[in-house]
Length: 279
Ligand code: C2E
Ligand code: MG
Ligand code: MG
Ligand code: MG
Image 1 (cartoon, rainbow, N blue to C red):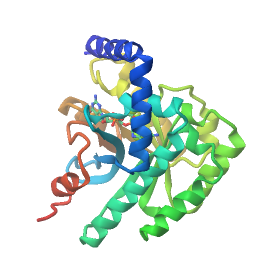
Image 2 (image 1 turned 60 degrees about the horizontal axis):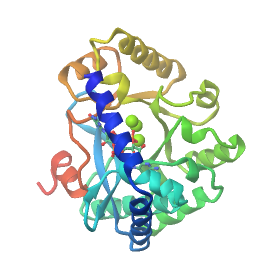
Image 3 (image 1 turned 60 degrees about the vertical axis):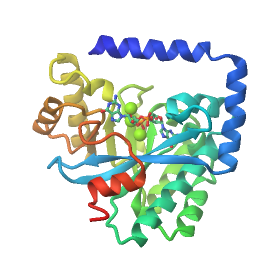
């Protein structure tokens, strides 16, 4: 399993460096257009509670329906967005989409769970981010308590004063804060301690080979213990198999996310599948 993943990764990497400067440039222009036309979309993936039956929250994941290439996943265009300086704008576009879907769902009478939105390093370094978030939420009459934000360890390596100011304002306004892909980044336990996190998401690379890989078991167990000790909830990402689920619940993991429950789907499909809508 691990071997397979390793090969997938290097294939991806190869195709990435083989992408010519010209096609990268084209993609950048098309991405600018997509942002201008607000044609990026978000899919949603459920995060399940301990019954394994009920959706506790859902994560918004950006998607791009490219005019010729079809649906693109973030790994195929986030690098381009990053090097073109478009990450802040992309983040705003995602947030707008999320809030619009939320309003749509509320107007249809749904009981929507918290929606979790990924924030980039570029976004958390902008002091006006909380103001932007408040504005977009106001536009759709969405309370910030309906939102959770996810940041990776790497995305919070910049100017601590700015980042903690931004994240604290979001939390004060009612949003929750999760640390994403935990264990894979430039880890800093002091940042984990000093920022207002309420949740840890264990990276899926540690979940893949549970419960056979002893090292992964030890790491996952210790992250669950760390979350417990700090009074944080803990989510396992990349749960694909029943054996993953069984092991994680046995060890006290609070929430599970992965293909075992659903891949990311359009908003309407998630509502139909997990909120029985329309009944
Ligand atoms: P992430 O935030 O860790 O999101 C989870 C990723 O794992 C998603 O990939 C999801 O489709 C995938 N995944 C979920 N369950 C499974 C599983 O059981 N097995 C496997 N193999 N994969 C699973 P996706 O949607 O391609 O997103 C990749 C990354 O791109 C995200 O990782 C996040 O870092 C970034 N990203 C996605 N949307 C946004 C966004 O709106 N803004 C920012 N800044 N980053 C985003
Ligand atoms: Mg995430
Ligand atoms: Mg993650
Ligand atoms: Mg991940």
